[in-house]
Length: 180
Image 1 (cartoon, rainbow, N blue to C red):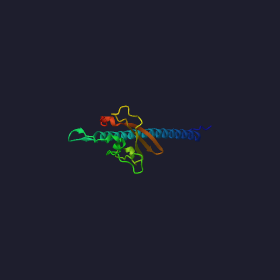
Image 2 (image 1 turned 90 degrees about the vertical axis):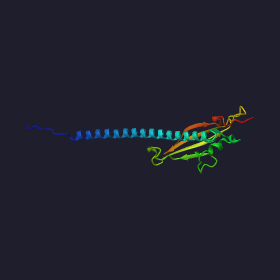
Image 3 (image 1 turned 30 degrees about the horizontal axis):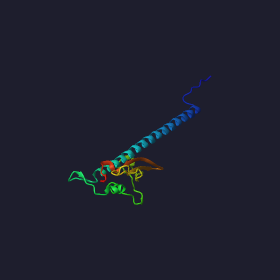
Image 4 (image 1 turned 180 degrees about the vertical axis):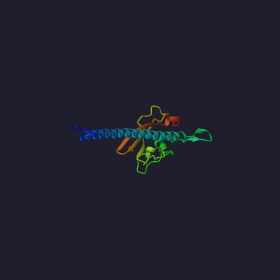
């Protein structure tokens, strides 16, 4: 009688081993791509938030410095300037209207890679739109109750999402008090 020795895997063992290896690799790649997609989405959201925060800071700076006179160190506001709050905001230096936004004061921009690596390719469009609401009504004749809402939208890929809304009022510095 001859004795047989087994020096390795058989065909069935090799097929089972390769199938398990392929399954493990497939799940590994799948979960890695989900993780990377989550990280990219997180970075994109953070970068859009930072870009909108920079824009709000620019608007605040413009609002604070619009009627400021450096020589006297005080605010000088021409008579009747607060009657058109929408006109006041849209003529600020940081607000340039889109050429296609006739009637609607909308400004759009695409942040570039200088704002963050996530914006490479300029695939994100951020828009801000101002809407004036004067329906709050004058409870006191010495106060202007107009409120402007600035709506931010972010668009990338197939997504077009409302991101943030802020309210602006001409009473921020008590500028628009009317003398009765």
